[in-house]
Image (tube, rainbow, N blue to C red; front, side):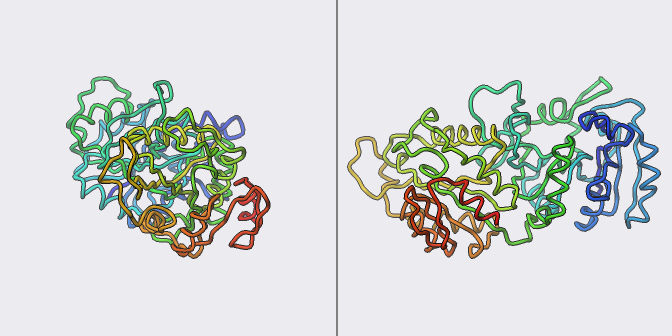
Length: 422
């Protein structure tokens, strides 16, 4: 497979200090970001690279040459003027599906898993998508239940609440995609001019993954990815590795408990909950909400309304630089007798806490080592669910109550975050 890397960025957000260095040559722990990319993709089996370059391209070519010293083959496409994220692609000819990456990313992911997904869906384009810590300035990807992309929502077009699902800047693209495009202008934007018009084909898909993909395009983000590379978080999140997670109850743990919540306006974040989840994100723990939602079975809230509640929760977390990797909920309720109840959901199930079903499903989906993971909540149901699933229970109490994992905490998630950090 050919990897095309867009390495022509000006790096204007990096400030004066990096003005003389093309962004792909900015070093992450003494190694250019572009070298990190090439070495990681070589590990995943890629040997052929096409670098789309422009700004100070001579420095890039001087450093990488034809790629032989890195064990790969490198060719160059030089833009005499910036052509946008798709301009060069529309001028090139591709025979087979190829990988496309932005040149300012640090990543480590299973290319084969993404490629298998792409082939299974017979996709024209597959977008690597994940939650990130800055959804407020990112384009949100909306999908259907089959992970088919149905819309792109830019920051300027927000109207309501949206899930924290963003395009990470990595794609697998079929040459057939360009048959859907008719452009006469020189510059082209991949999202706006190519992918968005192709949504009508129903063959644009989101590959959702927890694996590490972060851009280093600002001084702050550069410092973050440097720390993550040095700590081992980048490689530890690879799909092949067993993950560790913090499972979180929702009401009373992340947001204020107000009884049965049936609309987004009732969501109120607990103090420091977002700070705690942000710490879990940075430490390489997956953050996954596990919640009983009997309001569905009782007919007091539809699943669409619940999605909107969770979209609002993700929005509030995102505004504070935090994200959850997944939200799992049980819609069932064993008791009957409610006026608008849904009979088929009035059952005894294996997913309603204290049963472990939701935790076990998340563990399967994310390849989680439960013995190294925590379930944090404010009720005995959460503690028992943790024990039933084989993970470590943490009981949040307002009275400094003794906890099952020998950590004594108050009703504040941030206190546990500080403990786990130690």
